[in-house]
Length: 361
Ligand code: HEM
Ligand SMILES: *[C@@H]1O[C@H](CO)[C@@H](O)[C@H](O)[C@H]1NC(C)=O
Ligand SMILES: *[C@@H]1O[C@H](CO)[C@@H](O)[C@H](O)[C@H]1NC(C)=O
Ligand SMILES: *[C@@H]1O[C@H](CO)[C@@H](O)[C@H](O)[C@H]1NC(C)=O
Image (tube, rainbow, N blue to C red; front, side, top):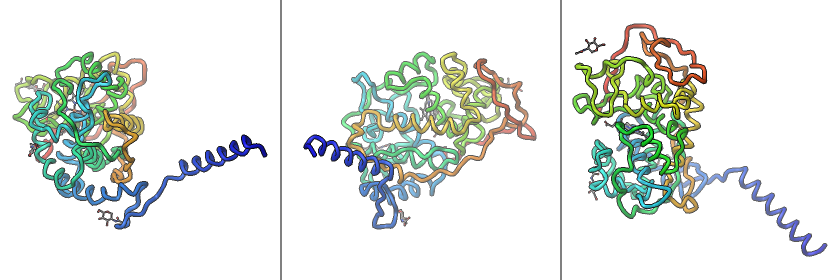
């Protein structure tokens, strides 16, 4: 056999081995019995347990879990694919909290960093790994959420992000899409990321009613927010029927509707993307997971990170379908996308609900 034929055979054999190792994920059993793909991830299991206990009241989908997801966004979005902004998903919002929490768009973020800081210090992780692990774990506490990816090994952040990288609810759709495009996200990914507002409430928009939720199922990662943002009527939650900057009053008692969410639901560039999410749990999970995977490593050299996604708890499922809140139906929908059929959704029986604020806000 000639040398060249031999080396071809060797190359083929090598390729075959690599195929096999790619198909069968590696399994490592840690000293404590946990199983993961990489030995380096073993250190994270007790850290996840600490985060659950000290930050999330033992694995709840409450205020702190919601806040952890918001923090990961406000940290990561301080980045531009054209350079000249911050380090992205680097934890700068935690490490340089004095600088970043002073930005207008980061209203209320100081409460989140204050809660996370001591837990962050106790874990010994870098700020970036902590912020983005806490977001993945907090989100996993919400039934219906996808299990987010977690990449391990971010270096410490070098500097705070500059101001004006975080979109505001008073921004136009054009400004919001431009800011996201500057960070590398297309309109479909923007809508996907806004799935996060299914586990969200506002403290700062109207400080007289802290914890006012964006949908009627704030403890569940479902597609309810995409439906409720489309409901006609502008009465609540403010008793005087006056909206605050960044808010469009909702017809649901006790609900906060962001001006930006409503504008995105109505804009021709995004209305169909928004509508297609309604009652399509799989679409939402898949697209949100993919967009978050991108967001949570913005600005990072991913070749140097280790995939430790298997330390993230597996979220409980959401058994749909979603429903119209009692007294609402198709006639209340302000439909902006005409190209596709609106999904058929049934109405919960009973009188119109009043939503309770999220406790602890
Ligand atoms: C157009 C872009 C966005 C705007 C204008 C926006 C705006 C806001 C505002 C004004 C609040 C309420 C803050 C308060 O009053 O306390 C909020 C809450 C929240 N946002 Fe966004 N957001 C955007 C995108 C995102 C993204 C991409 C994520 C995550 C992937 C996210 C996650 C959250 C979460 C989880 C909360 C609730 C926090 C809590 O309940 O404690 N947001 N957002
Ligand atoms: C896995 O890690 C957790 C958190 O440290 C620990 O409580 C548990 O005993 C470990 N082992 C197994 C098999 O779950
Ligand atoms: C902000 O960071 C400093 C360290 O730079 C820390 O001592 C402080 O507790 C943090 N505060 C908040 C609100 O995160
Ligand atoms: C606010 O709107 C609701 C529903 O449309 C109405 O019943 C109520 O009288 C209004 N309140 C004020 C102060 O205008």
